[in-house]
Image (tube, rainbow, N blue to C red):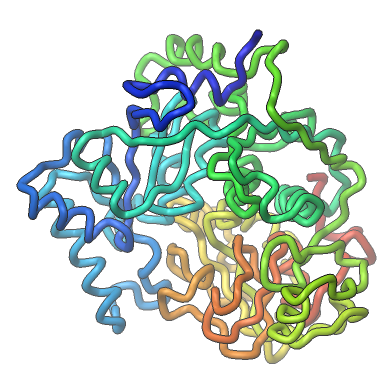
Length: 465
């Protein structure tokens, strides 16, 4: 019987352990940031250990960094964490993309941009959205702080092998529908727990048609469907993306020859299969307090099916039967490791060009990395956003989570291109609605959610996705 992409990656990295029991995996790349690494470094120091493979460890600052005045850090805990990472990287000889440096950015963007993220690798990071890197045909997943220390010391990690799930996505998406809509629709249809216990492989003609940046958006949110690992087979788009990047293999020909052996064999069988017809999709937005609570922008909010729904409605200040057009937005956030890439900003700028942010809306664009920010400025995107009334910020995690100055005020509704709409995620009492960059840009103009497949949006701004 053939093997899946996941099986091949797992088997290539097993060092010890029996099938059916926890197994020891070799780690090819360990990415770290300022929030989940201080205790792990201190554990090494107390035990008198070193980082076993500093050349396979790479650090950046992202969660705590301010995006307005980047060197003026008023939160003492954030400042301490950032200083600790700087000191620890110097002491343990780990490469650091320091705050303000040319490569600094969100950890899940720095890996791909530098060429560190490659097919066939096991990649770990003390962050749940590490599944992002699976878009390259890598086995990538988030780990806890104690596991971070274990990887520091041994360059290995103990893991129990999950089962295989195939997610077959087929059909061509319509104009105005994006990768973000695909993953939001998948989670809305199958729930936030459909991937629990599985390593998920996304495949099908829809996936093949997507760019690498779009593929990363989908894998990024595999964790929101309960999967620890989300991945896609590498193909020519993957290889083209990696060509010429700083840490790409010196012998790309030999590397590609190896990577071509990774895709799932034709006769392989998944333990579980689910499907999604992308041709039927429309723009999706979340109404509640987890990513499963998402529906087409054209639909009315559903009846409460349980206490969780009732609590979500109460928290969001909404009710069954409401529509997205009823929501009065106060904030719009375009950024995050889900949608802070250049193509995301290009699409949002295309929507906003020549228009103005509605009075009373606070709208900001936060590039996910400094390379993205510079590329966007070379293309004049910053001028388009600023002319429309958006704030153009420095790179970082920003308003995706309430760990830095960028937060949504209590009770205020925010159209956000990030990945989580949990209670308090973007600030105490913040009301988050997840959507695509194009939908967020349109919402900034209208002050509420609109169907971007209609009217001026369809005729003037949208590209074929």
